[in-house]
Length: 234
Ligand code: F6R
Image 1 (cartoon, rainbow, N blue to C red):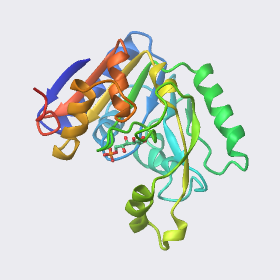
Image 2: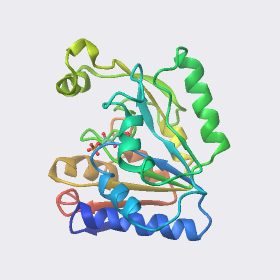
Image 3: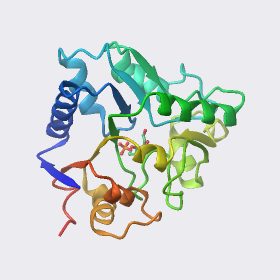
């Protein structure tokens, strides 16, 4: 693993942007993308740049089951807001949270990944070491799958919805096996509350108790960290 320590999330977004730019100059055609607060500075940098993404394909990590793209809590909505409405791509893929047959959607999405092998995968990390919606205990070699959200995630999301019963109970997520097929992986983490997860990811054993620790087995991973996220590394 390569580790880049940056001043703050703005510098982190710039560092990730420069890596994507270099990858594109080196013929990268498919970007794997994440939602959440972490990649926002990267997406801001991408949209403010004059780099042309119109020959690029993007493949997102995950989506809630049951939320239409028009729902402002959906990951479709997030991606449209932060990137796709501002920068044209050749094609953008996000799992279809409205699919009636979730199992068929999971299979379709794994085929999307097979047809569009990811050159550079962008990741954030959860405080418990999750990547995508792969929570502790997930198989380290699994494909795209339907995930039952933990009660703590449902509780944490409840504030964004009118009723607790509106909070999605399931999501579709790339599996850790799908993520590990990417040629290059850039994981960004900012803030002290990510420090334990980063320490376990980098210095702990490879274990599905800390899903991101599997990245130790990948040949081309860069962690972009601010000082707070890196503060527990020895
Ligand atoms: C988002 C995703 C999640 C987030 C993680 C960190 O598509 O798959 O694994 O990357 O929960 O979220 P933030 O960036 O909000 O701290």
